[in-house]
Image (cartoon, rainbow, N blue to C red; front, side):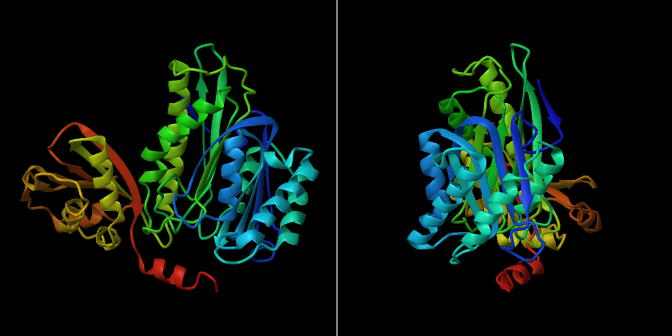
Length: 408
């Protein structure tokens, strides 16, 4: 059984978190966070496929391969990307500071950065921030919330989700996470920055397999602006303190855990899409009736990635030809005469195209449907039974303003 619950990275037993203002961004604004487990964790991670990888991505990838982690240190404001050997040295300095403050091994400290590319970290502020964070750790929901706010850049809201999962032996574990992401979002591996904690007892190999199986249907189905970041990182830490029977094979408990991870990841992915830079609404595309799962995913992502469909949603204009166009150039072969489309939100549903033929509809009603803060386009391809969902947002004037002024 899986139940949605409150909290984020401190929902699971044995995890604490903190956020603080280290002076990396504006004075008095929280810009560093820390997550710590009271016992060492097994790890899983997925990372950007961008050839240009930030120093923290390289650092964390190596630690995940080693398989053990105790803490994560995150800073906002400076991405530590395109920073050469100095960037790697600053990752090591951050880990050393955390090692000293937390009494853990430096090669169990993961680091993550987000912000402006091409600037060196203010390492003195980072190491002092580590000491402040270590002294203010707490396992409360408030601490998790502050950590989630501290990793924000152009995000307007913190992003957290958590569930509980009851296994076959009657024990209950928690899976909770936090993420940041608002712009430069078109993942080819996972997400911008995402940190998930769990007290479930699961082998490292199966933890990685579960994450790798969830990412393609959640974080990889989000697009805000078509740009894949240099810093994309998704980490899962599992400390085993729920004391469930160890998950070492793909049995029913593994499937329950994977579903819990899927639910948390889906929630975080949707939050990021809805909070896209300058966005006023979440734009979801569900493709069903596709010939294959892969076809459905490619088609859905093509629709939410299209600047014209995003502008259509921003203008509350049921110009469905833009959706058909995005489906058509996706690279998937299909019969246009078999396709049906409709638009919906909590205000209602508007069929606009049925098996290759445009339908008459009330334009004012369609505008009302497209004026809600969550809008969905459903495309039935009439070619099979496969389906997929992708998430994006509308494209507004504010997107250009935010990115034109990003370093100001």
